Image (cartoon, rainbow, N blue to C red):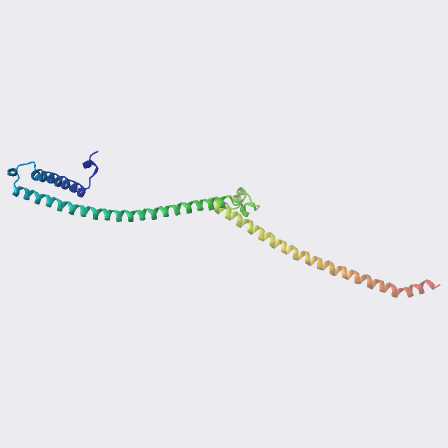
Length: 208
């Protein structure tokens, strides 16, 4: 592959063209001033013109070389800036990837977590929907929440009834204790009455 096909930048192409021109001009000038030619063929005016043309080409070549160096410097600076942007984006992408992995792990942990509500003796879905037909269009989460609320209400009602029964039990226990104490007091009074009646019974027994 030739240089013309490799180099496509307009500035570098112009530099190569002027470089080729300056090379040809230098060869031609060397040929004219070469000692192998006779003095008649070496025209000083022609040689001076060719020297000026060569110097002009060299001057242009220096200018293009300077411009190419500046352009290369700018390109390096832009490349460094773009590289920093790419590195920054790559780092952000890596952070997003690690965050995604972390969130996936958290989701998996939540999905596999043994929630307490799963162990609740909830009313079956069919029975709950039969009692609450307005919940037929609820999604799975809403339906589960409603069943848990139903279970909570049922337990609060049962707890209230248990407290009422407990109060009734305590009341009955107190009533039984009071009656038991009354019976004990009655026994004591009866024993005192019997003891007090013994002399009378003895008199009746001695009477003819």
